[in-house]
Length: 292
Image (cartoon, rainbow, N blue to C red; front, side, top):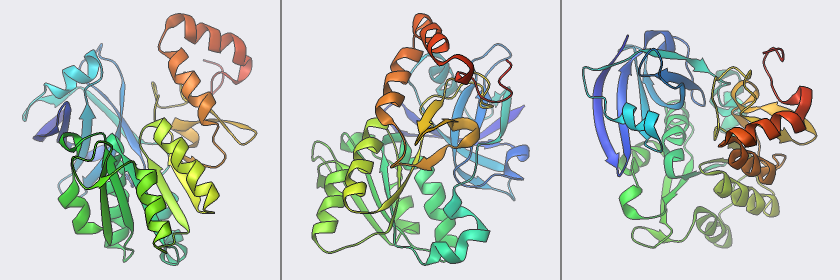
C-alpha cells in the first residue's frame, strides 16, 4: 500500500498529494510518470511525477478531477493509501539526464506550461536549477483561479512569465502570445519544452517552427496501461508510428501530427470509436509486444 502523507488543494478540481512510493523514488527522473489505482478493481490512472524526494521515499503527484476515477482519487485524504503505484514509466526528459548536462548548459531554454502541464514542467525546471541551469518559464491557464505553483516555479527558474487567457492575472493572452512578445523584445531561445493541452502544444509548435526554436512536447494525453499494449496512446511522429507511454512521452514537437492525435483522442472515448481505430490501424494499432 502507498500512503498519502500530504494533501493540498491547488485550485478548483486540482489537488496535490505526496505519496510514499519507495519503488518509484529509487529510479525516477523528471519526465516520467506512474500508473495508480485506488482499489483492486480501480481504473489505472496515469499521473506525471511532478516532484520526488529520494530520502523521504516520497513522490508528488497532481490530480485533476475529470471523471469518476480521478474524482475518487481526489477524495482520498492524508493517511489513506493507493492500492497500486507502478513506475517510474516512460523515458526521462533528455535535458534532465546527467550525460547530456554539458550540452544542456549551452542552451537557452524556455518552457511553455499550460494548465496541469505546470506540474511536470516544475519537476524538470527544478532538476535543471539544481544542476546549474536556469531556464525561462511561461506558465498559464484560462483564468487566475486555475493557476498554481507560481512561487515554487519562481524559486527555481531564472524568469517566470505568468499568463491568463482572460487577463485576470499576469500577461493577458495565451502562452504563444507571451512567447511572441518576448521574441519581439529581442529575447531569443534555441530550445523549447511545451507541456499542456494538445491544442496548446500544437500552436506552440506552429510558432516555434516559424521562430526556428527546437521544440519538445509531452504527449501524455491518453495512457491506459502504460506499457504500450492497449494502443491508446498511438501517435504519428514524422513517418513513424510511436506510442507515448513507451517511446515517449516526449517527442520532437515539429514532427508530431497533432490533428491526428486530437482526432484519435475524441474517437477513443467511445467503444465504437475504439473499434473503428482498431480496424483502421490493423497491426500497428497496439505497441508493446504487439500480440495482446
